[in-house]
Length: 132
Image (cartoon, rainbow, N blue to C red; front, side, top):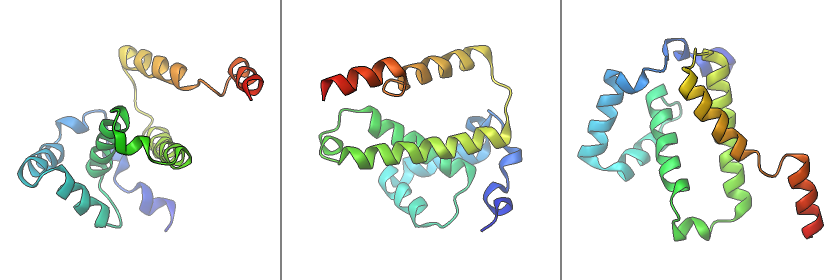
């Protein structure tokens, strides 16, 4: 699979995907068959649409953001690999589409990324080394 196949259709994506007809359709489908059945349908596909990608990311954020006891039993290495995969996809998505971001959105993203860098800056790494 070449890059052209991977990125086909991304040029049409703007920050208005939530306003699109496709987004409304996937939300209606979720309401009619349920989120678990919709997720299974999407997972069975080889290539997902942009709306399906965004819906799956939304679903992952819902589960990873909750204090679910099932996810507490998951190996931390697997959760970190999952999050790294999500970040790679989002990096490619944003890099390819290069959207103009509103200052409020840019501020929110910057704030969340600042929080998420815990463990990769020098002070935190020194602290973690001292603990072990």
